[in-house]
Length: 255
Ligand code: PGA
Image (tube, rainbow, N blue to C red; front, side):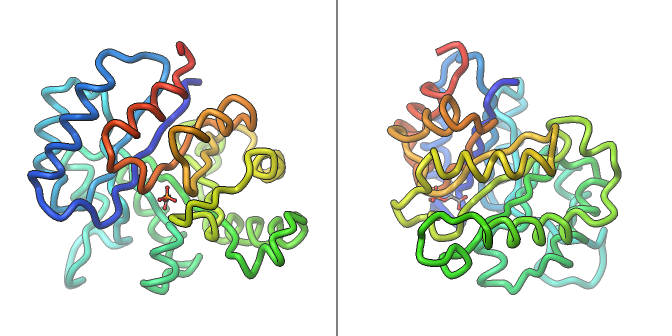
């Protein structure tokens, strides 16, 4: 399969004009690149504009949201339902990102409900899992505790998920994001991330598994070509068009 590069813009940029500029830069920069799949996940408020943009672009770049609620409709102030996203033309949704777990108190049970709702609305979930610095221990890369954390997160988040989702690689995507590596400029060394990938692969035999956490244009290629991840979840570096294009190009299998 072609590597999947997901851009998580988080709560950025601050103005729609800036968002347009980044998107235009990415679009022009990638040209007719082949051998890689790109998904961009902007904040909710930019989605309607983007949907128009992507229609014209014949869906070369796919669109994702950064979260969704588990209910379809009703008195849930501030929330957005999976059906609303689907109706708008969004295809993917990031769920269980560590920032949502940390700042909004999302539990594995809540993530499980969101996952089920997203699946029944026919969105493709990108489920984030990863250990905190404390869970990693003294950063000695001993995997014992990390394995427990990941096993539990997966077990709870994926409870009662239809079996078919484990058979088709891109119907459910998993992102391994060590929390201590996110936004710190301190990525998990690819050879260590690879050990985690091998562990995850025993549980998720067919699903695409991405790496995320301080990915940049210099290190991206090592996660794909040496550690054998199926793709990347890119935060900060996806807001700089030139940097993001470099990441995409370095990971293209046609490169
Ligand atoms: P980062 O973020 O690339 O800025 O570390 C990754 C993420 O949070 O998905």
